[in-house]
Length: 44
Image (cartoon, rainbow, N blue to C red; front, top):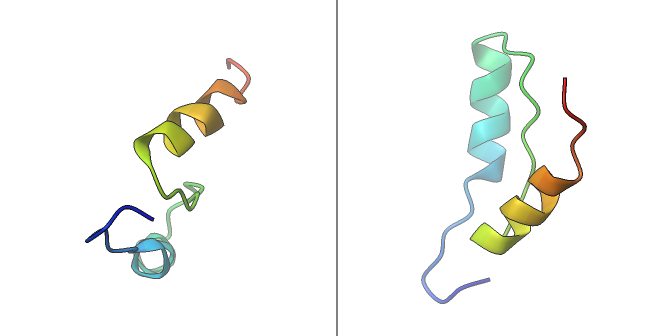
């Protein structure tokens, strides 16, 4: 994890459930991790 970075994954999952969202929360440590994940998604 980047120095000083704070994970809010648990908070995001809790919030998604609280608002009854069907969004998928994916834990990432870096922006590059996020991009790499997005590249694996299939177009709808």
